[in-house]
Length: 195
Ligand SMILES: Nc1nc2c(c(=O)[nH]1)N=C([C@H](O)[C@H](O)COP(=O)(O)OP(=O)(O)OP(=O)(O)O)CN2
Image 1 (cartoon, rainbow, N blue to C red):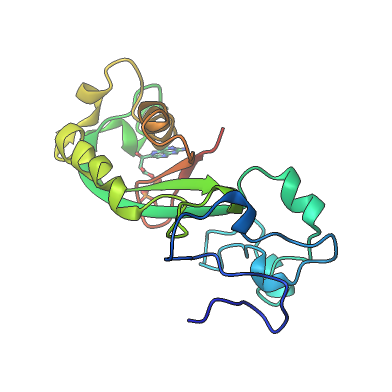
Image 2: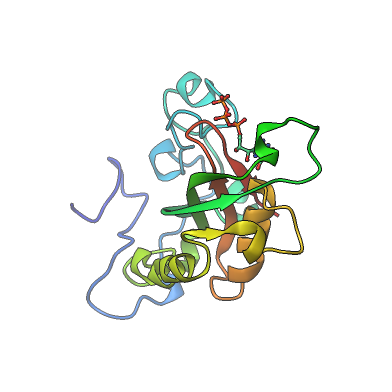
C-alpha cells in the first residue's frame, strides 16, 4: 500500500521504515475539517457498537472531526485481541433456584483493548504489537484455564463484571495503554470494564 491516504496531500505516511520517526514527521492534521477515512470508525461488528444503527447511519464512517477534536481525545486509536479459557464457577447471593448459583462452567472469551493517540504509535505504526500480548495468554492459561474461579478469586463473586475488573487491575501496569477489558461467558453476553 502506498504511503499517502485519500486523494489529497493532507496526510503523510504513518509507517516509515527508513529510520526513527521523530514527532515532527508523524502525520499532522490541518485546522480544517478532517476527511472521514483517517478518523477511526466505530466497530461495525454486530453487538459491539453500543449505539446500533449509528455507524450505518453515517455510512460506516465517523462524523467529520476537526483537529481540535482529535487533540482533546487521548486515545483515538485502539486495538483489541481476544483470548479464550474454560473454567467453572458458582455465583453467590442469587435468588434461590437461580441456575448460576449451581456449579457450572463457561468457555470464556476475554478481550483486551489498548488505545493510543496517533502521535504515540510505535515506529511500525502500532498501538502495541499484538505479539506482545502473548504473555497475557500464558497468564490466563496458568491462572484461570480449567480452574474453579471461586478458588482463584476467593474474595469476590466470580461474575463476568468482577473478572473484567480483576483482569484490568492485574494488567494495567504491564500494558499502560490498556483502556478496557471485556469478558464473555456466553456468545450473547459481555461485561466491559472501561474505567
Ligand atoms: N450481569 C451478569 N449477569 C449474570 C452473570 C454475570 O456474570 N453477570 N452470570 C450469569 C451466569 O454465570 C451465566 O453466565 C448465565 O448467564 P445467562 O446469559 O443467563 O446464560 P444462559 O445461557 O442461561 O442464557 P440464555 O438466555 O438461556 O441464553 C448469570 N447472569
